[in-house]
Length: 248
Image (cartoon, rainbow, N blue to C red):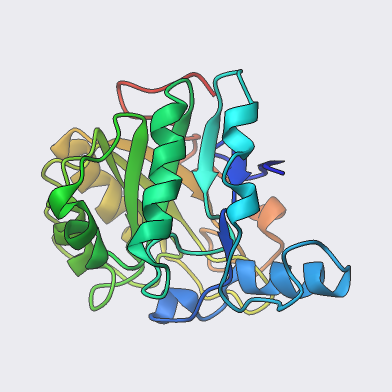
C-alpha cells in the first residue's frame, strides 16, 4: 500500500517499482538502499531481493483506491526513470496518474537524460511535478537542462545532498528548488555559503525555495544528529512551494 511519508515536502509515497543502481556521487549513501535492507530483513513484501530493481504491477492501482486529494512522492524507494524500467511500464504508471486528477504526483529522477526521450511523443500530465536531483556540478547540474526540455506543469530541483558549491545556475522555467544536507553517520558536510548561493539564484529566478534539512552537519560545521541541526537557515524556516500547489 501507499504509505504516509516523513519527507517534509510530501504527504504519501507510492512505489510501483523498488530498487535502483548507483550512477553519481549523490547515490553513495543512499537512504533507500539502507531502508530496503531493513525491510528485507523484516520480510516486508516487495523487498525479497533487497535493493535490486523490481517492478510491482500489483501496486499500480493503489492511488485509484484513494478519493481524498493526496500529494504522492512517486518511487521514494527507486528511480522511476531507471534505464531498466520499460517504457511500457512507465505508460501504465502515467495512465494511473491521468485517471486520478485529484492527486498530485512528485516524480524525482537522477536519470534526467531519459526525460526528454520518454516525453518526446507523450504529454506530461498536469498533476505531475517533475524533478531532478542536483548534488554537484559534474553530474547534477546538467540534469537541469534535460528537465527543462519537458513541458511539465511544475519543474523542480532536489538539491540534496548538496555536496559542493554549484556555481552559476540557469534556473529559467524552474518553479521549485529544495535544498538539503546529507544525513546518516557517514554524512558529508554541507556549507552555509553553498546553500546561500542556491537560494539567491532561486530568488532571482522567481523559484520557490524550500530548505529541507542540514542533515548530519550543522551550519557551524559540527557533526551531530540531524534533529539537533534542525531545518532553519539564516535564522528562519523556508517552506515555500510553487505558486500553484495543493495544500499539504
